[in-house]
Image (cartoon, rainbow, N blue to C red; front, top):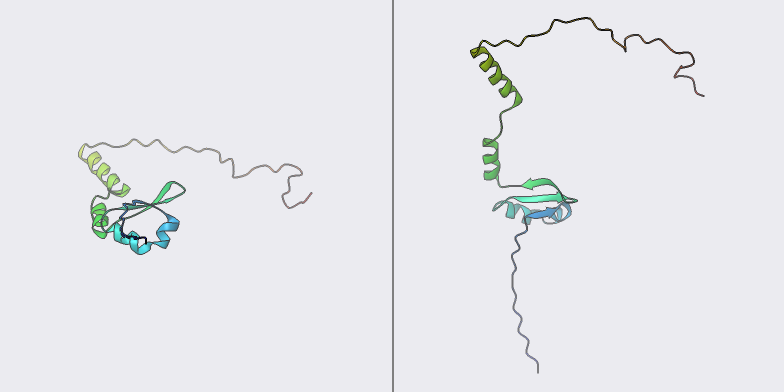
Length: 113
């Protein structure tokens, strides 16, 4: 007589990187793990997404960089404080090469050859 003892072991893997296919198949697990730590989603070895908890998303939004408009406003303020003006060159007339091009003979695009 043979005696067999089965031990069920629950293995917890620390998978941080997911492929898109496995992320689709395991959305609840992906979201559950994202609540604890950020989860990265890859497509063909290229990072395409990261799933993070709402708290982490709020922290990232708080660290958001200023916009280009904010930077230009700061530059204008600095220039005004230093009484600096950017010299602008006067406009001059330049010929427009696309305005009127002489038509070459035999170059009618409506003609099929």
